[in-house]
Figure 1 (cartoon, rainbow, N blue to C red):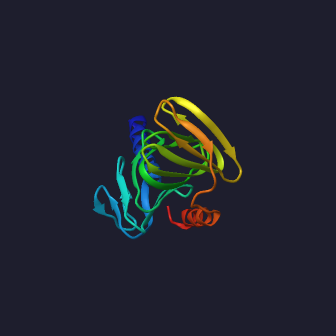
Figure 2: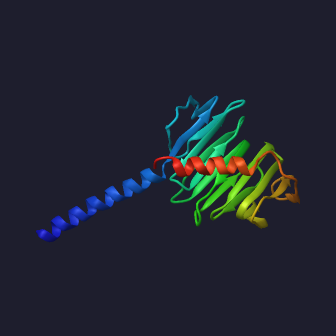
Figure 3: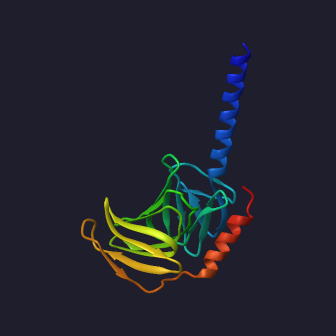
Length: 200
């Protein structure tokens, strides 16, 4: 009888612990300015971002989504992003626009664009998608793999900003060095500061 009660108690504690961990990892909209929509509805500060949600930003608008204190997305103006969370991984679909990602060390994380995928296990990186044939990707700090479907195009390790332009059509993409495009260390520092200061 005591064994059964202990088992029930342990099971209940396990469920509570799992729920707490899931809540801590749930996406939260913790910064926004301008017109920001989640699944087509106008978003409010502090809104939870459910699995499979689509975020859209209008002109002169920005949204930041955090997952705990160490992983976060900054979605710039005129962007459309879908957040997918299979198991413990992050799959971010950037249809168009601009995304700055701060990713916790050893976290399985990738950004999929209409032509290429950028995958990491903990990196600061910037992605801009102006159209269906071009993606600008900067490894701001860390290690990033660029892929064309299942094929690896290039692995970039950088201590400080190494940008590339990926262009063409899937199956025949080209990767070329590119100058810095429209992002700064100050923006990264500000995003990191907000991540670290917010309550979980």
